[in-house]
Image 1 (cartoon, one colour):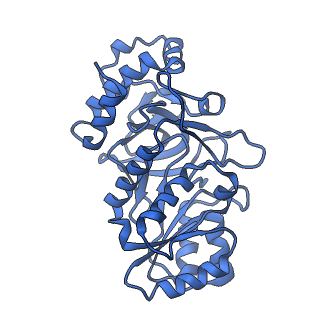
Image 2: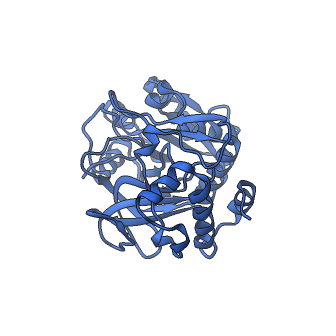
Length: 329
């Protein structure tokens, strides 16, 4: 019989061959042990026993995180991550059973994509997240900063000038330099300082947070590459409701963590899933969400290829502009 412990044990060994089997097992477990999800499935008149393929799994709309503290089973949360949102919007909340497991999992995903954190200086410019508190992104980046072991790694609030000065010095070092910033702050630096960051890996995340007009990712990256003098701009796709992340390799395509799978649904029929090469709305399976809900219907628009790599193209109509990489076409 599957338990929380059995899924925790399986998580490090998830791969393309085992993903669907584990996802189906987790679905049956959560359909039974998660009261909210169970009631949602019953309202759809779906019998969990009839689900034999991942494409048939019902996905819980992400807005439920705003009204419910979603839990599979009964346990006491160690902390609750809260989305940043924009002024006047209701935020999402994600109860976390084991923060250390989340941080370990996030580190493994990052290092698989970019190598050991010990090879970097990481300078983080995440003012809106730091001011809000309880941010999963801040918790993750803070952990990354500590793992670098560099005395120069750290957070910068609004002190753009100090960050630009420090980056200029660190570019002469043997380690690689990462500047991980919320989108509007990176644009502020680009416009105010026009720094020469040829040796810097720039990670953009978090959208404009109501500070600037939203633009497409293509437009954003074009501006940042020109004004920061970099060849590539990297992106992270993550959100409060997910404990796994996807990253780019300096272009528009995201490569999901092994514990993460993206399915594209038809915009007019959320039960029609599995579109390939067509624009639709993004559904996410996140096997790291053992204790909450692993099957989430997001409000992001995207497109996926046959390898499972995906693009994020914007937001569905009438959805809140929030989360990471909220760039509207």
